[in-house]
Image (cartoon, rainbow, N blue to C red; front, side, top):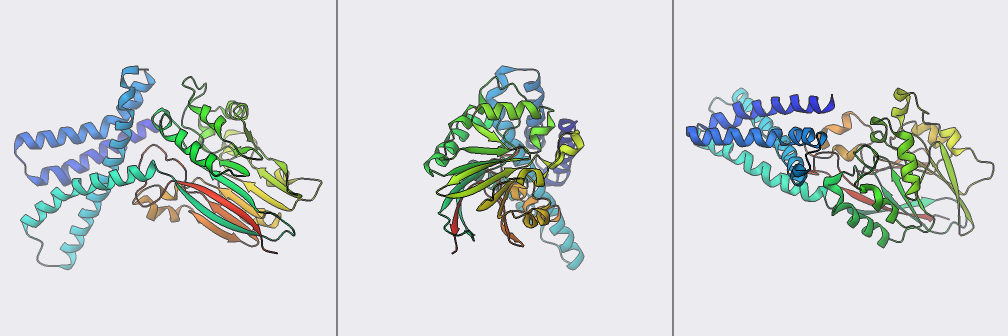
Length: 372
């Protein structure tokens, strides 16, 4: 159903581009046919790949990256064409004299060139996660510095694993963090992992271990149990409404994690912050992992010092980076909820469209420091 919806949207986009960008150029018949054909090819390469992958056409695998890039380019081309049309509409409303036909045609030609240039920039940003360093003050007495690396929304697939994620793992391991956490959406795939795409998670190394929580994408295929078992087997300790106590230089660190909020619609265990934090012995600090930034007031009132989340991708790319705030109150970066710090990771990877125009893939390095 999801791929069918994407197909319908793409058909609409291609039709719009044909009538609002290509036909108004008034090219010769041969060039016009070529432009329309290329637009159709670019627009339909992604859904075509999805179907051929389903039918297991192994020979089609090398063009997977091309299909994803094409999807990003067509999406951006549509958005810029739409903005161009809105600008022309405003000119018609507020000005009696429109721009000349020469300038109009030049602007039309510039749209695909600008779209291609921005797609390349966005593609590069999507494949190059930056290390963002954040310091969190901790009120606990005699607390020694604790370093945590957060990854989130990695969305591994064959197209994004062979060269990209191993480099991410190397970058993370070079930080020599005390703890590594992964706040959901590990991959876009169905288990079993016949191509061993997930094996690189087993190469992540931290002093106290690697911990994770499930994201909404782990629920879509109906394999929640299988995902937890697979990731645990790879050395990622999955926290599902539970916690681990870490003895850090004399301080007790409670690291808790909850299931994803989509679980309720799947008749699976819903997030239970109370259960996740329930502990007989006192902890110096409490850290909560939750893919979605919800129930924040309750978490802060429950004594959580720091919550780490993901999900939003900060809108991932233009223009959605400007619109994401209408859907989510907390989009990216550091926030303060009462006495609790909340951090929203923009995503280490990307979902489907390899474009980060206006946002940035990130690896977050936290240093928790005592302010006493």
